[in-house]
Length: 261
Image (cartoon, rainbow, N blue to C red; front, side, top):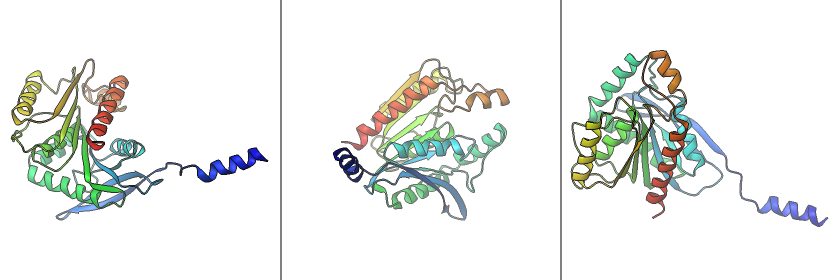
């Protein structure tokens, strides 16, 4: 009887079981419908930091949603954004290059789309709008770095195997976010001179940044589908499980430092 009573008491006093939930949502920028996906843990009503997840050049796909769910399991609310509009996804590198180049060629529109997603994230009832971050992969990594350069009010920004170059270098005092760059040392798309230029830019602007060059890692090292894409399209892509874990750990450290101060 005592054991039964103890078991019932344990059930009654135990915290609600964490459950990550996700839902598709639509938001707009001008006349363009953006199709995103938001994930959070509904076991608590506590306000928490919000994180935007910007997709690779393939477009908003399940990989970005997977990362949003991972962040939700860590205690954040995460919105996988749509930078192309209408949920557009590329089926071939030629398409991906066309879509991503169009966005990067018009940074005012890209910023407006990013800010529209940030507004949606801040409006979610689970989010503390005073605590925000953004992460991005490949094309998305370049996007979040550009948003940091443009002074978007973010506590932290993380780029995974993203390009580093810019036509509008960071200016002193403009960047509000701490920055993490997780780069593959064997990524042929990111040249040593681009790394040197990025570091010089960040140093000159007085940015709080961390640059990690992971030995043995190629482009798209965080995506388990990278090998499949690489073989199919003859691209130098490769998943690296060890570096994927290490770079995610670096992101966790960045968020703890940023949001637990």
